[in-house]
Structure formats: C-alpha cells, structure tokens
Amino acid sequence: MRHLKLEAKRRLAAGGFATLHDAQTAIALLPAALAREALTPQAEPGPAGIRVGLGWLLDGPTAAHGGAGFEAVTLLRSRVRDRRSYVVLTSRAVSVGSLDDGLRRAWLKGGLA
Image (cartoon, rainbow, N blue to C red; front, side, top):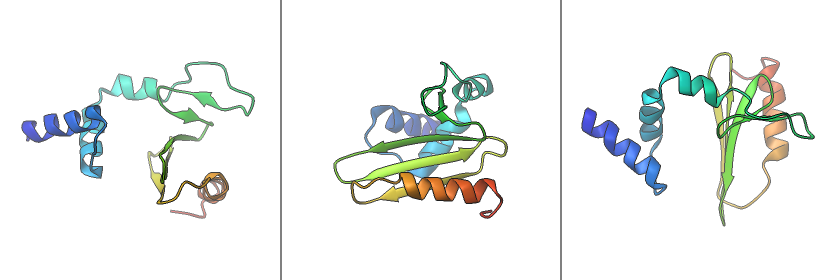
C-alpha cells in the first residue's frame, strides 16, 4: 500500500496524469493542518469579493479550483462544511462560468444532493 501512495504522489507532482484514486490517495495523506490552511484566506478579497486560499478560490460556503488547456476546461467545487464536491469537465475550450453559477446556487439552496 505504501508503494501505491508514493506512486500516486509522484504522478500528481510530475503534472503528467493522475487518476481520481491517485488524487484521493494524495489528499488523504495531506496533514490536517495543511488542509485547513489551504482553505484559509491568504489575502484580502478581490473586486468580486472572492478570497484566495492555497490553490483554491474561496467564496464563503464553497471552494473552487479549475484549469484550462488548449481543448479542455475543468472545475472542481467543494462545499466547505461537508466536503461534498462536484466536477465540471469539458472536451472543448468553453466558459463554464454560467454552468457553475447555476449549479452552485442550486447546490447551496439544497436542490442538489
């Protein structure tokens, strides 16, 4: 098992590829204090009122992390209180802002599980 955890960390750190299992394994290895710090605002809010943690955009009840490549967009949003998450993945370079806004509103109102 230890070998699998080290391999997952190596793949994530190398930036090559990682499976969902790799990410879950690496996150489970993160010390609790560092996980809390990642979700703690590290600077004053920007113009939209969003704060920044260590790699996360913080808007109060949720934290988001996303990225884009030549032909893909990703977004991971987690509810801070219960660590439930949703993921948006596209195979085209398109904006996912309006989709995320609608999902986030419904999710925080209890419309999504």
